Each structure stands twice: as structure tokens, then as C-alpha cells.
Image 1 (cartoon, rainbow, N blue to C red):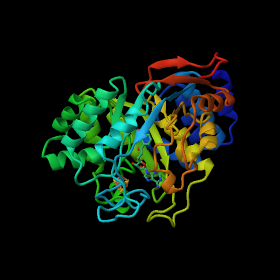
Image 2 (cartoon, rainbow, N blue to C red):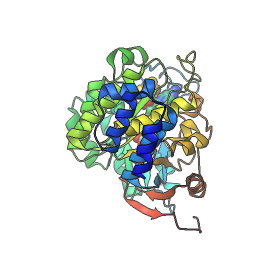
Image 3 (cartoon, helix red, strand yellow):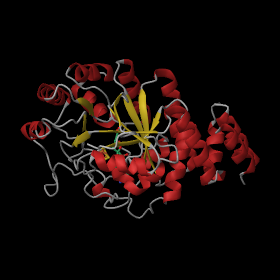
Image 4 (spheres, rainbow, N blue to C red):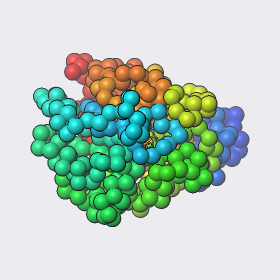
Length: 382
Ligand code: V47
Ligand code: SF4
């Protein structure tokens, strides 16, 4: 395989600088900020895909991971005003706002009794009346109903607000949530770390350094997390690499990130609707360069409800090794923003089929990437 790639690099119609980066990748050397930026400006898609696929195969073979999960969104009421958000409502906004009661949330958990889901993903708007102690109790009760479920909950944005309101440090707040059963953090709220761009698209929520500090604190407490980027709006390529560079530095320090999830900006029903969405080539480039740049991240995830199952399947040849989960039609965040999948739900059988169709090996994982079942040889699907 390596010899083939050396030939591809040598014969590719790309600049000497991009060829040099290709050779660095083959030698497993880390690429610099400038080289990352050069890949965006000068890298040809097929070439980037080859490099990204080489790295993903070294790290994960042909495996494509997925899990059985569902989402709970306790509310879409939010004190913040992110310009890209199609989901949030102000407290005074009675139409289209929702607020699940505790009982409704427990009923959702109970509706999965007897089903082999392994993870619940709990995130929502930042509600002024749902605080740290409310959520700690909620998680404790969720765990009483389903002790086996991994609780991945609350973005750094929600956590910053909860800790500020409860007048506790991030360490104290996270310790309380951990003691009540929270296992890990999702990657949302990162958006773009560049302070100028961040101020333009989400001026009033947690800052970049607060986001990074909360994840660092969680990692130190033994709570792993994910990381995201919101791309394809007003940012430049330099901002994307700067964002990944900050994540790479933190990962060097803590090793606490499980996966990186590039989130494509969707333009329906928000204050940035005038901005055109990125093309599929741009999306695949983003996945490939993430895979090449983030050498200390084990996994790159394509969140299929956002980009649609066809693009997600294609991304598997551009460095992606994880397709998230079955989701089960339980998230509204993207359908409201114009995502491909209006009612996102895939059965395990469908997920396995699209992975096999792409020539890869489907593997069910838990949140921490322990293998639950390898479906690569299995004819009989669940
Ligand atoms: O932070 C909001 C994004 C994120 C739009 O950790 C939008 O496993 C595109 O982070 N267009 C929250 N994106 C969701 C999230 C996530 C999703 C799935 C899995 C995991 C994980 C994390 O959604 C927000 C924001 O970046 N978002 N509006 C939009 N119009
Ligand atoms: Fe609130 Fe999150 Fe929407 Fe921002 S993205 S307005 S924090 S729900």
C-alpha cells in the first residue's frame, strides 16, 4: 500500500509544497499550521482523500464505527442568540418553544426498556431555569432507570452557564455532574475558536478559552469528550486550521478527546440564511484535512443526519471512520436548519448496509470505542 501511495504522491498534479506534505504524512510526521492551510488552498480532492484514507487505515483499518444511541433535547428555550441557530426560542416566545418535564424525560428513557441502546445524548437550549442541581438530579434518575446507559450530556456552553449560575468552578460543577452519573461530554458549542469570527456568529455564549478550559477540566476528572467545528459560513481556511490547532494542543496535553466532528453550516431558518452552503467537494476536503491535521485524534465522525446518508457514505473514503449512531428520530437541531435528514433515524441494518456498500467493515461500538459487535463477516443482520 505504501509503495502505491508514494507513486500517487509523486505523480499527482499538485505543487511541490503539497507533495512535500504528502511525504511527511507517509512518514507519520505532524504537519504544521502553514501546511494545513496550504492543503486547503492547494490540495486536490483525490490527493487529499488518498492521504486521509492512508491515515484512517493505519489507525482503524477498514472499520467504520457506529453506536446505538438516542437524543433527548430537554428544551429549545435558550438565553443565547447564535446567528446560525435555527432551533432556539426565547423564554417569552410561546410558539414553537418546548420544555420537557422531568416525567416526560423519564418516559423517553423507559420507552427504550428492553432495547439494546448504549448511549443517551442529552443537549438542548440554555434554559434560564434549568440549572446544575436540576440536571444533576435528572441524570441520577436517568441512571436509576437505565444504569447501563452511557450519559453523554451538556455542551461546554450549557456547562459554563450552569456553573456560573450555581457559583461553582468548572471543576466543582463537573464533579457534581460526574458523581450523579454523567459519563462524558459531547463536542458541541465549539463553533469557531477565532475570537473575531466567534464574536460575529455567537457573541454572547462561552468564549473559546472557556470551551477549551471546560473540556480540559473534564478530561482531568476522567470524563472524556468530543470536539466539533462549525464550518462553511464566514470563516476562512486559516480559521479552520487555527481551530484544529487549538484542539490538537489540548489533546497533546490530556488525550481526553474521543473524536472530532466537522459540522457543516446549514442555512435554513436562521440569521445567516443569506450565506450559501458549502459544496460536497468542500465537505469532503474538510473531512480529509481534519484527518490529516489531527494526528492525535483516533476518530473522525461524519454526523449523518446533518449531511445526509449519501454524503456520509462518501466521507468514508475521505478519512471518516465513524458514522455516529442510529439516532432514532430524536433530534431536531438539524432538521430545523435544513439538514438532509428531516426525520433522522436509521436501523442498525441500514447503517451496516451503507457501510458494507462502501467496502468497509461495520462495527458497533460503545461511546468509548470499545467494540460491542463486529458485523463485517456476519450475513445475519439485527
Ligand atoms: O454547537 C447549530 C451545531 C452543534 C447549526 O459530540 C449547526 O457526539 C450546522 O455538537 N448548521 C450541537 N450546525 C450538536 C453537536 C453534536 C452533534 C452530534 C454529535 C455530537 C457528539 C455533537 O450543532 C452546535 C452547532 O455547532 N449547529 N446550528 C446549523 N444551522
Ligand atoms: Fe442556544 Fe445552542 Fe442555539 Fe446557541 S446554538 S442559540 S447556545 S441552542
